[in-house]
Length: 60
Image (cartoon, rainbow, N blue to C red; front, top):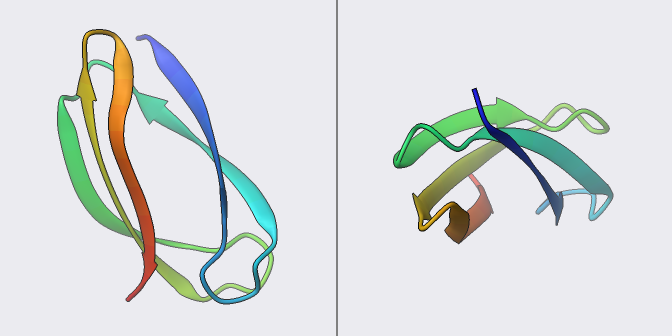
């Protein structure tokens, strides 16, 4: 399984956090809690040509 570490700022507390993206999945949309403030973040991304082409982390 090929993974990519994606860094982003939490939309609530603005802390820089990271997550691993499974590059074998072409697109996902799910909710994950911030590891700092524990508030829910809506994550969505698309993978193409072995790279993350779209990544969004929004308050849910």
